[in-house]
Length: 431
Image 1 (cartoon, one colour):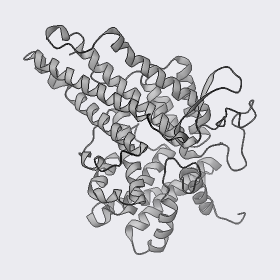
Image 2 (cartoon, helix red, strand yellow):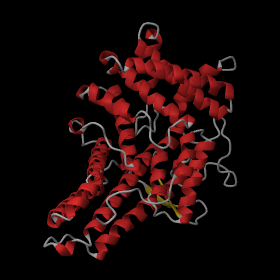
Image 3 (cartoon, one colour):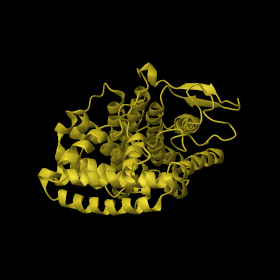
Image 4 (spheres, helix red, strand yellow):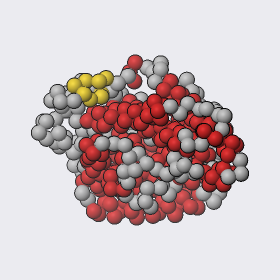
């Protein structure tokens, strides 16, 4: 509306771009609870500290999102002031158990974290609120999975926590197995979360044991070799779980391989753009899983001759992990044109081929910002694993640059510039 304020416009823009409430394309729910919760908090903001904090956080995230989109420095400055107020209010909430366990409090942490990713205020690549996510998930207990809003909040907080564990080698601070056991694994998304959680816990366990096992190798090499062999078999089982995840998926989740509009290559499209998000997260997790397998195989190979244990360390087994990584990278890269809205599910250009990012009436980009946001870490995995070709690395960095400059998600620029192009440290060095 012509007479609407910047604040009103920013909220509408944020809801449109960063939530999936009411979307026909909603295979993955992203902050779908936010509009209703924001409205309820509006009525209670004057008397309830958690409601007031949540509203400040949403206002800050909405203003910085539109501020970047509309190139409005004054709106970004206002967003930062609200962000500071929200942080101060959140600190007070976390000091009281009855306030800390409220939906509004966890939702405030979620939105503050999103603000920092949009604004580029992360301290390096690690999120400053990962510890807070874990603590609040623990405090809130099993009951948070009994209603849609609680599950939505849990999925967001838990996924962000484990993305950082796998991407950056971080360590979980709390045992979450008790809550994972409560997830309904008949649903594809909780099933993928469950397997990803097992992988991240295993990754941390193996990585943290490296120094102790190197020392133990001089005392009891057979014990170390036996442990490595056991871990290798367990890792292979986790990888098989990932492979089985693809079995029995709903028909509307199945990707299509089609020629590009110019006929130069094969691209991957999906019935819905949100399905691309799920598949690319799955591929990123498989890349990490193969790196763990490679590390264990590399550590065990020179030691196996010292023991009667004979794990499968054939050259084909050792090379198959790299084949899988190359396949996953290739599939992610071939999904980028669809994920960024350049082609439709049938492979047709959505704009003039000479100007694939041409302005649209409502926005400069042709996909919701949340879909670009969900693509950030899978693209980072491709860059950081060290196995992408130069052309693939260039394609990924270009996609991240678009998300940073055109969509206004500044974390994307950090990821594009900060990717080292080499595998993360893990159990790959021989003891």
